[in-house]
Image (cartoon, rainbow, N blue to C red; front, side, top):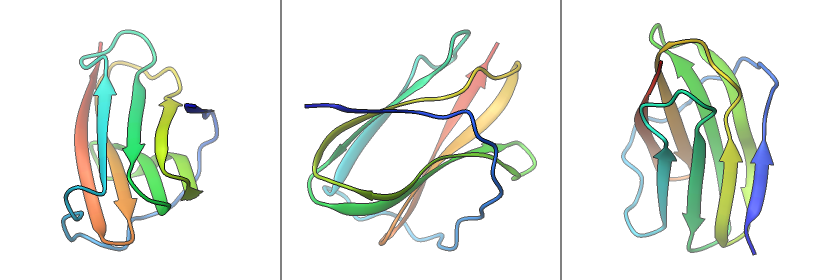
Length: 106
């Protein structure tokens, strides 16, 4: 079973932690990257976790809160909204820290 999420809302939230996320608790990919179509985030959790996925611009402003809340173990699929050309960051925030991936849209 894959949990599928989609987002179009724009909210203001700022991550509160800068520590590295504990390895082994999850894995995630961002594709396609670079993107010319809406990108997808595939997240695999080993245990129930409270997460926050954020879309951030080059100035550090939060453009979208992709997900904020608890997720069960297993695969989860999130689709980003269509974005204008540019450079972005996708931030995964968990109880143990945060991790960032770059996204280029053309």
